[in-house]
Image (tube, rainbow, N blue to C red; front, side, top):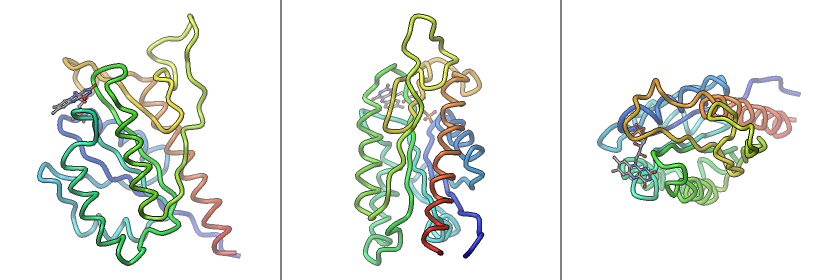
Length: 192
Ligand SMILES: Cc1cc2nc3c(=O)[nH]c(=O)nc-3n(C[C@H](O)[C@H](O)[C@H](O)COP(=O)(O)O)c2cc1C
C-alpha cells in the first residue's frame, strides 16, 4: 500500500487582500500550495498543472455582488478544459469566501463552489465546526458566522486585511486541515 502524502492546492482570487489572508490560513492548515488568480482572471500554467496533479482543490473568492468575483468566474469557465477530459474527476474539493456584511449573500458563493466541484465530478468537504451562537460567543470564536457548508469570513468594509477576525482565520486554518485529512484518507484508499 502507498504511503504518499496527498497534495492540496488552494486557488483563489482576492481584489484587496482580505480573501488572500483567508487563503493563506487555509493553505497553512492544509499544508498546501497557493495559487492566485490575477486581476485579469488568469491563472499561471504552473497553477493549472498543480490543479491537475492535486488530490484536493480548494476554491476561494470574495463575495462580490452576491457571488464569486468575475475573475474567479473566468477561472471557473476556463476550467471547462479540465472538465472535457475529466481531469479533476474524483478529487476532493472545498472552498471559502469573505465579504463585508455579516450575511452579505456569502452562501451563494459557497454554493457556486459546490456546483463547480460537482460539475468536475468531485467530492465536497463541509466545514465540520459547530457554530458559535450563544450569548458568550465573540468575534474571535471559530465559526462565528455559523456556516456548515464551508468557511465564511466577514471583513468590515473599512478594515485592512490585518484587522480580520482571528476566529474567521482560525476557522479557515482548521478547514484546511480537514480538507487535507479527508484527501489523505481518500488518496490512501484509492492507492490501496
Ligand atoms: C465589486 C464589489 C462587490 C461587493 N459585493 C459584496 C456583497 O455582495 N456582499 C458583501 O457582503 N460584500 C460585498 N463587497 C465587499 C467585499 O466582499 C469585501 O470588501 C471583501 O473583504 C473584499 O475581499 P478582498 O479584499 O479579498 O477583495 C463587495 C466589494 C466589491 C469591491
